[in-house]
Length: 343
Image 1 (cartoon, rainbow, N blue to C red):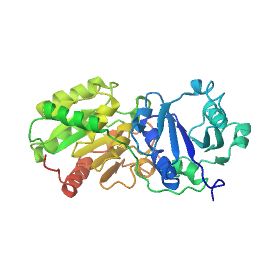
Image 2 (cartoon, helix red, strand yellow):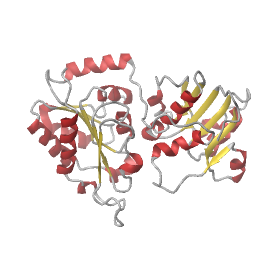
Image 3 (cartoon, one colour):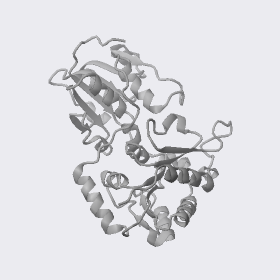
Image 4 (tube, helix red, strand yellow):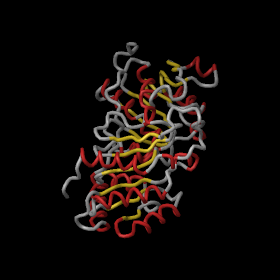
């Protein structure tokens, strides 16, 4: 579908979401930047999550918005953007976009009145019928902008990278290799994705048995302090606990220096997918890798739940059914095909 305007110069993305869902829209933003070199792209997101977009070279402006603040925004100054793309179904966000953009593209909303005002109203496919990245690309594709890749984007700033190198030099024994990142926590409302902490411990011990110089960095927020502290105590001197002690971007900077990452289907795993570092991701049968795992990644090794595709898979199906041996096989393959680099 051809663009109606031969030279749009300004675009707005509104995506108020969690970490992973925020990053899942970056291929769409990158597609716009590639289609219109030099255009201005602004991104508005969740107040506590939009920082994951900071530093991306194709974004001119990154700021936060909520459905409450949106009610009062954009009522003066006219339309500042040629196009706006809105993810989600919060009507105040769509209404704000309609005030500040000449044309608004969004998924179908609950209000027929809102839908009639959209330049393009994109119908969402059934749940899990489409991978999350192509799904988000469908908004820009609705106005004729093609994809230029499915990889998520995240940028570690030079100062952040320097800080991370210094932090590792202080915290990790000299010569430790491979450096393995472990993200053991999951979103509090999605605890069915949680792999037993005992499984993480057994996995780490298997790795340490075969790679005696291995060192583990335990990442996560402050939601599960008992689990992360237990894992640190179990692994003792071959692990460093960062969970609950660092900001999001600090954790990401450290993750970018690992040799291998093992994590659940969470926001930090999506951050990790922006780096060319071997990663093993664990997926519940309710949200399989085919709809959420990293795409276009050179060394991702997703592990799906054994009940994938079975009728008895529910939110109550335990992640413990993914056994340690299955994950360890993925780890062995990752390290064999992408050996740790000498530091």
